[in-house]
Length: 102
Image 1 (spheres, rainbow, N blue to C red):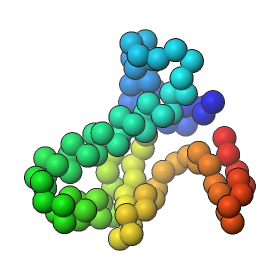
Image 2: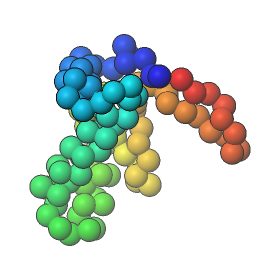
Image 3: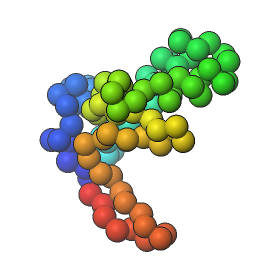
Image 4: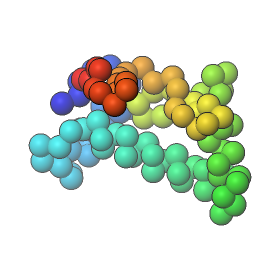
């Protein structure tokens, strides 16, 4: 199970409410990440409409100088749309092997 102590208070509050209503013995990190992904998708569709190219570009508009402030911290996407700036590590896989995991 992931320790949520390193996450912002907004994530902890969300997890407590989510667990109270919807989960039994679930890993709360996945609930936070799922909620963040849905929030990001809604924001992208709200800003860019149904234009696929504009939605794709929405994700790369976040940069190291203009971070998205999400449930689990501030982050941005590089031009390849990989996420950067998270303050925690879930799994690190190198050469097809698990190197580090919490």
